[in-house]
Amino acid sequence: MIPAVLPTYNRAPLAFERGEGSWLIDTEGGRYLDLTSGIAVNALGHAHPALVAALADQAGKLWHVSNLYRIPEQERLAEALVEKTFADTVFFTNSGTEAAELAIKMVRKYWADRGEPERVEIVAFEGAFHGRSTGAIAAAGGEKLTKGFGPLMPGFRHLPWGDHEALRAAVGPETAAILVEPIQGEGGIRPLPDACLKGLRALCDTNGALLVLDEVQCGMGRTGRLFAHEWSGIAPDVMMVAKGIGGGFPLGAVLATERAASGMTAGTHGSTYGGNPLGCAVGLKVMEIVSDPAFLDAVARKGGLLRQRLEGLVATHPEIFESVRGQGLMLGLKCRAAAADVVAAARAEALLTVPAADNVVRLLPPLTISESEIGEAVDRLDRAAARLAAPAP
Ligand SMILES: *Cc1c(COP(=O)(O)O)cnc(C)c1O
Image (cartoon, rainbow, N blue to C red; front, side, top):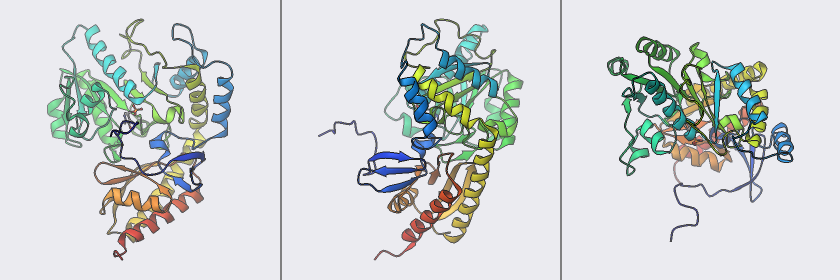
């Protein structure tokens, strides 16, 4: 019999009741060190007092009004994002998927308004993940996402990751946009080298195409900069944001330059909940904390520490781990053992991690994790690896 909850997930047999900072407490009182952060969502950990206060304060005043009216919290969050990024304008969504949908619509409208409505091809990359809507699965293109859900929305071309030759052959004056994650998340923490991101920007400039970055997972301070592309010195035309931006409240956004967004006039797009006062009040507090340069420096420093400790772990357990990759507090352990077994062994040590494609275990701790918690996490991974390496009794 089908469960009451549609069984689209393979769930671990754990249910949590409370969270405190980097820790999750299950219904039996067990304490788990959380290196998942709800998959890069709880950027400030669980039950951060400033976020709880921002939410409670707004909850007592106003939860929802229609976007038929001005929403001051939404305007303030948009202004904060515009001030700290390349963007001139922001549209708020409830998720990364909805941000992907708008980004695609924005690209199409841009070319339609320029008298080239047939210019719809968006170049994307294998291993990408942009969400689960029909548009987002077509954009990512992978068989795991798309099988059984055809016919897929046309207009996407998928290139192998890191194939410069294929890229130069594929991008031309007919290309509408290039869509890429600066660090692939679901794809297995695969960073796009800075030189490649610069190369994509140059390719877009040469051909007039728009550069659309998906920073849903790697953005909002995760890499030690507010947005991951800042490391390369380039700026996109359009950027998708979600996950960390709400610190756990469902919130997403599309950021864009005035030029890229020029077709999105009144009546062309909308959302009932997107940019509601509750979400934006929380988002504003997240933004205030995460965009502080001292906070971002601490993320970079802690990321360096975690990485260094993980390199040591790889050296100690070469039969379990192969290498470390990623940036800041978005790190991946490429495994020799099955990544799913490593995640299960870590869970047995009360440490939560996330598997990803390419046999990688993702480590996405709250950005507020302490240095001693980082040490504790690596000790637990060490015990998990020893557990896996031990001959079966
Ligand atoms: C999670 C994710 C999405 C989809 O976000 P949802 O909020 O789950 O809709 C899109 N792109 C990337 C890179 C993601 O990691």
